[in-house]
Length: 520
Image 1 (cartoon, helix red, strand yellow):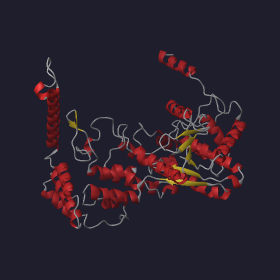
Image 2 (cartoon, one colour):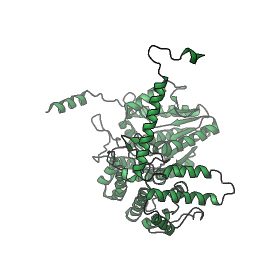
Image 3 (cartoon, one colour):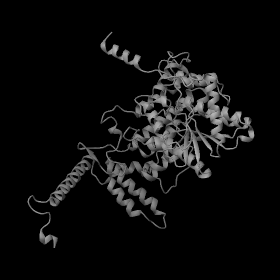
């Protein structure tokens, strides 16, 4: 055996095995005690509960535990509301999204039937904040670690808005999460930090939302503990937890997700479900495994291919041809004497829209019955993208309906735009011909026409001159080389000005900073 392998083996042997949360009192007694704790916390006050549910194993375990505990209470003691919230980013793994959607519907029905004060809520980002509106509409490049624009818009804001509304209505809220210390060292550290600030037993302050607290009932469980609970205790809202196990199994690279029988059995749960468009991870292992392990999941292949196209090789010029040399406001910023790429160009944004719509068409035509109505991009998103293109980016030829019809093969179902905002494709082709394919000249004239048309019908033309100034600022360059040269000259001039200012303020050696005359 090589030295490297023997060292790895030694490290593996020395790595401590985490004890099960059930090892001390046994499975039955531990679950009974935890249910008692849940009922005591629920009955201790009138603060409503909000349970975060993603459809994964941890959140399912927490919700199942709470559901069983509440069912043990007399009906007249089930007084305060329990809100189950699930944030759908609209770009979730479609298999998981379908699972969650059906599960939420089932929960609502069973909560009414069983007399539980529980309601299920599917939260989505506002149309102006969705992934496709930002990428295809505004032209934001696919997220990167240094430009992670997606998480707050897609996940944090919808849940924060909901929880804040509960706090505003009731004064406080308790958030129940499936976070566990065994997930990662970083997670354990954060949880330990907030444990020290607990105001009540098991309730930690929420680090981002005032007047809200966090309760993590399974914080000391391992992956194996979660699966043992889900497999041995029936799902109270009528779902089959074995189907959840199968979903995790299909998302594991080796296709294995065994039931836990002893400490030597590998645990299941390293699969990570999330947004299928995510470019913050090196590759979507769960979707890749699903397609690889199940021929019936091959309909997701266009999604995987599109995700990989969004994530270009990690080289400086990988997607430079798709992006403008100017920033969003028209400024040119240099790094090593080259412009930092800005938003996607118009043709790139139209290309991304076409690829999304073509993937949607493929899934509807080739996928199983349950995904025949799947929307990879909603009509509300398309309408917002169209508004941004025409109104904010001044692309008054209004190409979105044409791209939709070419890709889907059906008329665009959106409403018509104000005639004062749009010019026909024929006029735009004539304008391009007049500009002799000078793209910056064409963009400037088109934008000026757009501004003129928008302000033409206004009684009070406030902001007109500011809009004209901004247009000239964005488009006055002769070409990209001219823009780069001007940016260099501006940078050098600013550098010289700073050096001159620093020199003038530096005292001369051997003399006071200011002369006596200057002081007087």
